[in-house]
Each structure stands twice: as C-alpha cells, then as structure tokens.
Length: 146
Length: 174
Image (cartoon, one colour):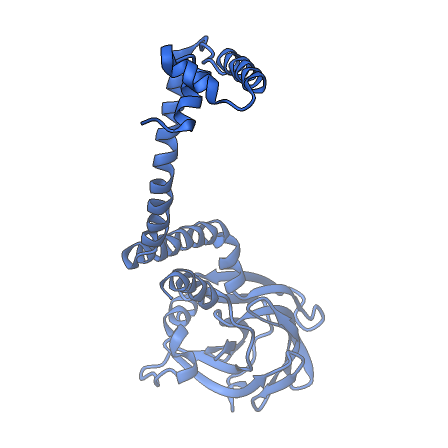
C-alpha cells in the first residue's frame, strides 16, 4: 500500500495539471458608448473587469451599453448579432483555437459595413475595438468570454 | 586363550614363534593352501602400502590457504543472504516512502517550472486575444487606419481605429 502511495501522489499531481478540454462558454458582445459626463453611471458588470484599462486607455469616465448579446458557444461555429438602434455587430465564430475561438466581426452602421476584423478571442483576454466618434463620445465594441 | 582367527592373523603377520607357531601350523588342514594365502596377503599388503602412501603436496601452504578461504566464504554467504532479504523488506518503510513521494513531487515541480519558464513568452501571447486581420471600408472612410495594442496588465487587446467617419450624438441611442 505504502509502495503504491509513492507513485499515486505524483500521478495525481500530473493529472490535475493537465489542461481540461473546452466546455461550452458564454461570449458577451457589447456596443458601448464611452463618454465624459459630470455624474458618471456605474460601469456595467460585464465591463467591471476591464474598467481600469478602459478609463486609462480611452480617457472616458462613463461606459454605457447600448446593445449587447450573450451567446453560449458550444461548437465554435455559431454566429450572432448585437444591435443598437443604428449599429449592428455581427459575430461569426469560425472554430475553436488554442484557449479561445476564431471570430469574424463586422460592424455595421445601419446597412453600411464600417469595419471588419478576424480575431482569435482568448477565454482569458477581452477584446475592445474603438469604433467611430459618436457625438461627444466614442463607440466601443467589447467582446468578453465569461 | 587366543582364538583361531587371532592366531591366523598373527601367523599371516609372522607374529607367531616357537611352540605356538608349530602348534598352529600343525592345526592347519592344508598347509600349502595356507602358505599360498599368506604369500598373497603379503603381496596385497605391500601393494596397498605402495599405492596408498600420501602424496607430498608441492604447494601445501597455497592449498591450505585456498581451502580456508573457501570455508570462510561458504560460512559467510548464508548470513549475507538472510540480511539481504531483511534489507529489502526494511527499505520500504513509511518514512522512506514519504521521502520518495516528496522527491518525485519535487522533481515534477522543478520540471514543470522549467517547462513553464521556457514556454512563458509563447503562452502569454496565446492567452491574449490576437487580431488576425482588420480592414475598414475605404469608400466610407478613405483615411482610416487601424492599430493593435495589448494592455498586458488586464490582458486586454485593443483594436484602435483612426479616421472613421464621425457620427452625430443620435447614433448613441439604444
């Protein structure tokens, strides 16, 4: 018993260190208007994690979600849309990559394509895209694997 | 009073003398056969003496040394065998098993840290979101440019566009 114990302990440690396979994950996609206002509203919960980076990087004090989508990605082949009144973000998943998903993103203003990008969205790393200037603020596109 | 066998043995060895000899020889039923047997016995005795005498050893000391070594070796071996079995049994004691386990764990940790240290730069980029390509519609925004930034502190990747067409505040509506 003692002899086997000496071999079981390292094996258990090795097994626990092995990476787990991909499970279904939720991708949050948001259209966010960043502005500087006198009395900023609290940052939405989805952006809490990156609040500091957003404020430092873009220099705004309020981040308001004008459109969003939460999609459970199971196969890595799904596609979805996050829309506001005038903007639409189409996300087309094109398979899993190491530690995330390959996504094709298209930002539309009504029916006009403004921006297209292909990205490897990591489960540990949010993506922020700086969109066009809107009034005194800025449109941001944010994708986070939750 | 000697028996016949004792007198016979003494006669063969020429130990009988005087009247005892003459009386014994007179008692023999066939003296000629007895004399022939005596002669044969003597011949046999001489042959045995000659053949079975001890051969002198050329290296007496060497042989005795070899013999002693062999005896010592044979008397030690059983002791060694028995202590060997005990040693094998005693090796797997609980403290030793714990040490073996701890040592295995330490080796694993050292190797893991080594491998992680080597792979860190590559893995860090795997953990960060990567922009594979980006393009802005050149008709709508002909002067637009794109740049990529990584905020490693929060592991945020930023696709930064410049020169996109500005829009009125109405477009911020939900």
